[in-house]
Image (cartoon, rainbow over all chains, first blue to last red; front, side):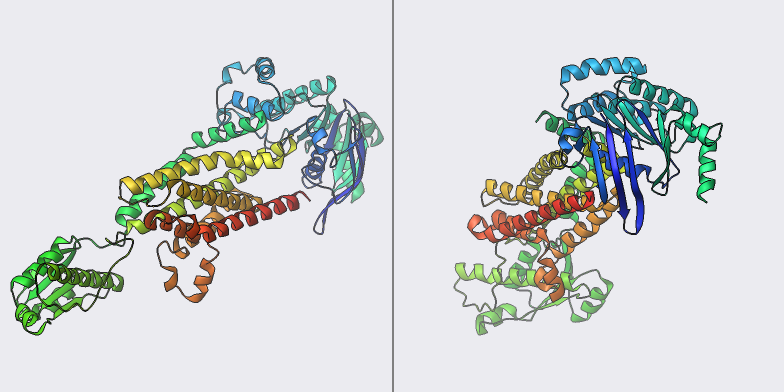
Amino acid sequence: MKITTQNISKSFGPIKALDDVSFQVDHGELFGVIGPDGAGKTTAIRILCGLSKPTSGEIMVAGLDVYRNANEIKKNIGYMSQKFSLYENLTVWENIRFFAGIYGMRLKDIKLKGRHMLERLEIEHLRDKLIASLPTGWRQKLAFSIAIFHEPQIVFLDEPTSGVDPVTRKQFWEMIYETAHNGTTVFVTTHYMDEAEYCDRVTIMTDGKIIALDTPEQLKEHYNAKSMDEVFRKLARNIE
Amino acid sequence: MNRFTGFVKKEFLHIIRDVRSMLILFGIPVVQILLFGYVLSNEIRNANIAILDHSRDEITAQISQKLIASGYFRLKANLNSADQIEPLLKSGKVRQVIIFEPDFEKNLVRENKAHVQIIADASDPNTANMLVSYSRAIISDYFLESAETTSLPLQIDQEVRMLYNEELKGVFMFVPGTMALILMLLSAMMTSISIAREKELGTMEVLLVSPLRPVQIVLGKVTPYIGMAFINAVVIIALGVFVFGMPVLGSLTLLMAESLLFICMALSLGILISTKAKSQQVAMFISMFAFLLPTMLLSGFIFPVKNMPLLLQWISHVIPAKYYITIIKNIMLKGTGFLFVWKETLIIAAMMIAFIIASVRMFKVRLE
């Protein structure tokens, strides 16, 4: 599934959170949006998921308008918010069942897939533990696994690695990488520049505008930088 | 449908696993009704009084006996002279003194008239008022009874009769009030908090991104609370009937139907609040101020609406609990049918529809 946005803008009163943003994400691509806090990343992801309406502009997902065909699209997308939103007073299994259930999955399929998923994450022993008792890293991996449990064609991840230790972050990116490799389009935001290296293509945002969009290699070459962090620093200097 | 039952099930699990929710749902109603019923009731029991009987004849003895036997009063002292009255009232040991004039019986027979003086400690005016009216009622009652059995030509200068609540039981007032208060709080507060909690946790966004429709989300959230609140209504009515001896003269079905309507109204108010409140604290705060205080103070639950300043009387018209209290009092105490409460029912239904329309609008605005 492709995502195409054309000239989207979003204003909250006098503040322009998104200013005339256009880009395209290809099928099966791992697409990263990088930028400091307040750059408009979350606003962008919320608009793409249909949680918020743009002030102007058009968004097409798989050739369908996000607002006019919301119900068609919703079945085919997955979403993970910044807070790894799982229900804390439900067990691991109850969370899996609930979220799979609201996507209309059948109980038989949920049981089978759920078992595989827990095996893959190596947390079968935590099946009946409350989410509240899990460490952050496990919650995050579980939240991601649940977001892609119904096999969406696109998954949106809003700062999935915030507040997670570096080792878990690395493992997590491997999970994302694998997902994209299997043909799911991944749209991910982050404020960690080093994470950009994992992406197929990266857009760098500040103040609601896209200031660069390319593969990490091209960006590094173009700005004559060794790392994405350096790319960003040079870009920031250019703006000032 | 499968999605919906999954949602309701999840919501039940939230409630059952959350100690705070369980306490609010099942602890508070029982405690509150017992508290209001026993402790906070403004009915008088065993008030200390003194009697100064200048006459000491048969009739005064009988009247004194009747006063004490009523259960409202307890005889603290039998006085011998008027000088004792003031120090006794001042010390606060008695709240009321009853004085029979000399030759009470003789005067009664000879002139058809005798004097009883009642002196009450009005530093607490409500209690004083109540004590005096109880005493007067009991004394009148005595003459009424004796007029039937003897041929004494007696003059009765007053008649007090407390209709629908002849024993002046405060609990008859508190059961409907508490019921309104609890159903209001439970329904509105619990739904607004539980929706706000999803927003706080970020799960609301996940739900909104999912194929669930907003209507399904809201209905799924609300359904368990309709059930819980309804169970509560039954518990409160049962407590009122079996513990406090409150009658249900009218139709129980109508009573339950009206309660269900009130619950739905409160739930839609809760949803309306949750469209505004971003956090559980805010939801709780709004619920407290928007529901708890006005419901307690302005619904006629504790203070009669007719005694309020005009401005507050106007405000009381928009307090839903006021109408609900009127309805259940009518059904329980007067045994009236739907014909007598249709106006109030209509008002509550109209409020519910208004809240639903407002919430739907707010919901749309939020997505702009």
